[in-house]
Image (cartoon, helix red, strand yellow):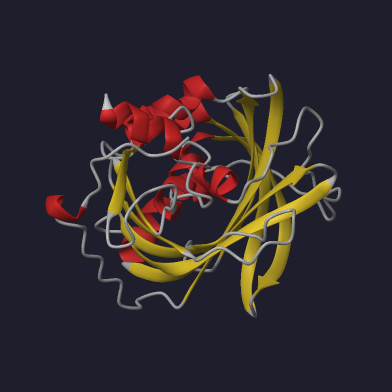
Length: 277
């Protein structure tokens, strides 16, 4: 079916479009050991309430990055845009790295994020320049946590509902803003169970599709409980090399309240043809 072909072709779109080979077992997104480590009752509560704090804020500008290693070289896919946390919709412009052969940089991929769907423009691989590709996120084995080269900001916050084994590291700053730094592990299954109805199907798919349901994270909350920065480290199985791939996804949120108008494509603007593998 055409829809199934589109979804299969969209999996790891950023890596495939860039002509990159995913790495085998052993990629790592680990960080430095925690300093000034403290923990105590209630440490998990602010993280699980981060979604509500973002909904109260309404919207924000977002910067994303997704890192992985390939052939001994670490590559980074970057994105920038806006997100409406009340409507769970966003718009990102994702920039792919150069081809390993040194070819010219790819055109940025415009992505529209919505509950249950990812829309991509400038997808390439035979898709007309004026058309969008639509992918049902619940049909992706990673729930679109890594597929588009950027983690949906709402889903990134929803993952913290599954927070466990959390340590409060201490006070620090993110982009000049005082924040509280938490380090821990999120359980995908728990996050999916407690997620909003709109995000639950995609997170359930991720809980089944990743190599492990445990997702290490570092999260930074401001004094209003809003998520300012979060870094997740995902592990999934690479079907091409039969190895486990580690991907580090970082989200930075700022300028809360910024306009975040997102117009989803009409059905006539969505490409219905076959996408080259």
